[in-house]
Length: 153
Image (cartoon, rainbow, N blue to C red; front, side, top):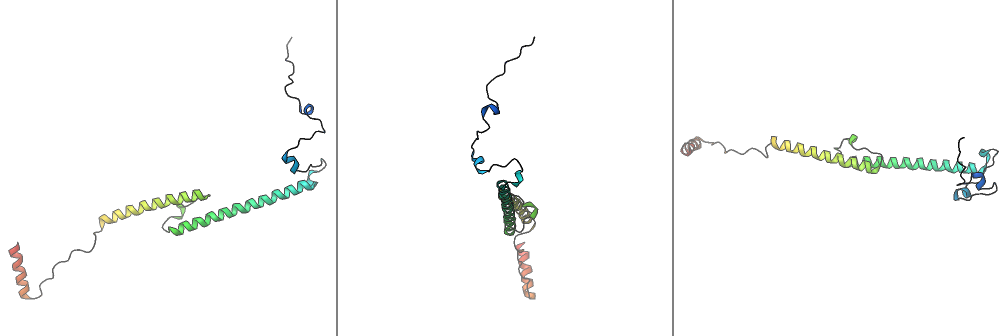
């Protein structure tokens, strides 16, 4: 013979807890009108809520589009401030992402510029070559210049 545990009475069942006439009052329940059981689509309260929801969805979509447009305008302005940057390096879907990618691209460009400047500094002499004395014009000047070089050397 198997023993079974007696049923616990810790929580009453939903039907025992409330009578059918008892209504629980919540803030949401006060805002939403009670729908009839016949056809919830015909209730004017439900229809007005659906219209409000559709209006808010349209507002949200418009705000999202405006935000994306503002981010694209910021991207164009940032690229205009530094035209040497590659357009592919500046991207993002939020202002923070866009500014971070712009800062990284600008830093990369600065490193490239510094590297090129160092390479050019090594390969190109600074300024024009030194000047040489004019060659003597007359025969007497040529003889004197030649003798002075022999004496010096």
